[in-house]
Length: 590
Image (cartoon, rainbow, N blue to C red; front, side, top):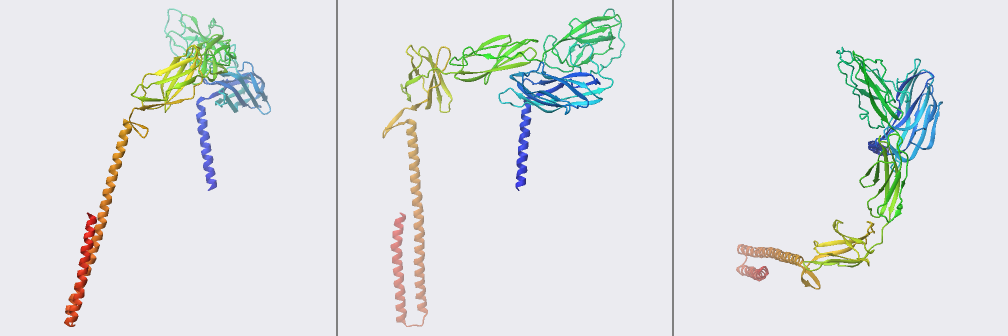
């Protein structure tokens, strides 16, 4: 029995754990090795990047343990250059004996992006074979003040070492060793004869649809174009030269081509050129701008004071972005709509008036590629002096000239905010009243409220909008007008109706009870009369039977006469008793 109970408890615990894991995966951040595949010759070196896609969440730390096959690959170095992390609880280390790379990195500022650089690892191909790069431990921490683990997918990689080795993508001068690209599917057709040179290709890239924008997503991408019927051949080149002219060299005929991920930030250009029977046409240039680095870390200053009675603190923040430039600042206070400012290197913002309290303020700077970094500051807004209520009408009679009047004192030449709530804390009324130079104020409510209890509080408010704490609530009663006074108690019309109704109900109940008791007593007396009559008649019958038996006996006449007289006397006595008791019982019934 105990073993079965333990199994049930373990099952419930594991089920709850799985549910929590499933719920936490709703906002996850992914780790990725890029490129994810490649083939290299023995002795060749290549580099891979570990990147994080936060899917819009802010993160501030990551822990990674990555495994590789030390028989196939050898780590030459692990670089932190360009990393989003600037402090390391465990510096990046590697072992070519165990095949382990590990680190724990963090940043005091929350960052987000689609391809955030963490570290770069340089490998050397040692012997023929294939080595998988596998995450055996990976966790990413959200910048939420609670250290929530928001780890999602951790995608490794697989690299082969062959005697033929691997090449690089032609025309790409600033990238890591590229992922292999599939050969475009060739189109076989007979082009029509043209009368002039081809037009410029109209290039489309689904992953990077706007050639004037910036992007932070790094992945293989496919470019496509429409082929006019006169085109027989074409050529493409990907580099960082905006005016590059594609050489007169044919790659064949195809309407789309997949290119490797652009692993280094910068501006790239895809060049495509068509050829027809007349010759090579002009080159089309398609801009692809990559920025995976968040803006520079910054602090939020509060020149009005991090702790003051100023209800509208002034925030000042400065940062920049070296590549794509700042896009916007978002100021976030919990429970309020975000405040969005178009980005500049330096910015300031004055908050709208806030009531007294402690506020955690987040300022998120985003660049034009969508990468972001955040800074936080805490502001405490202190209350101003508490007002005082010196007079209040605590009982108002409805239907009379009574009115709610409140008087008091507060800071001079300011306002007080009077709030009236019902017993369910629903705000019935809120009014501002000015104070005079002596700080005195008076409020009069000229309309009547419904019958019931209300609670009044008062707060002071100065010209800046700064507030005091509310005063202790005072109960105010709205009651109906009395129609009579009984034993010193005022009774309203509604109360009188209730009293009369209750009295009528009690009187009806008393009369009904008396009737029921009378009926019950009558029934009881009837039973007694019936019993007495039966007993008396039984006795008379018994004496008559004796007289009949005497007549049948062979005794003398004197003896018979004596016995008949005795029986007759008993019958007379019994009838006298019946008459006496029956008269009494009938009187009781009446």
